[in-house]
Length: 158
Image 1 (tube, one colour):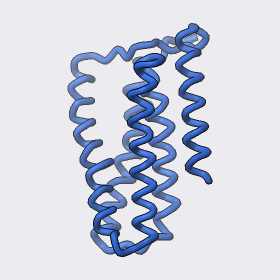
Image 2: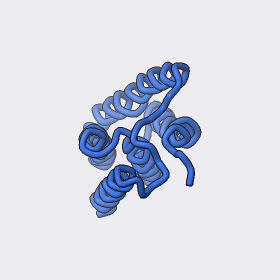
Image 3: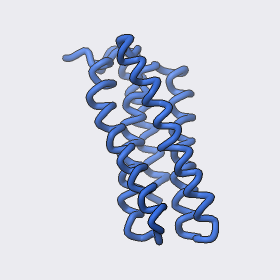
């Protein structure tokens, strides 16, 4: 029940953000204004996100094919991830491009909660424990990156 409620809340907050920015009721810009160096960093970060946030969990899902609890966890993890990707693509075209920043923040925080919540409940081998920690570390770093790099490019102040 937690996951559907989170998705609903994140979607409503993202839509509210988009309309708030469009109506100039929120102190954020519609576009992200990254420098050339920031864009170069983000390109590398996206490659890291694909490897660590998507490919590694797919490998963990395949590896967990005989473990129902692990298989269910990674299935839900990947489903939420694909909902995030769809939401970012749809809402950035429908509302404002900068909506991807708060969406990324909401979903990264939720994903960290998912990982920490599941860590003690899943049966993990040495490899899966290491991979699990790498995935969690990436999402923690993603929250820092969004806070330090992305939010400052869209916040215009009060």
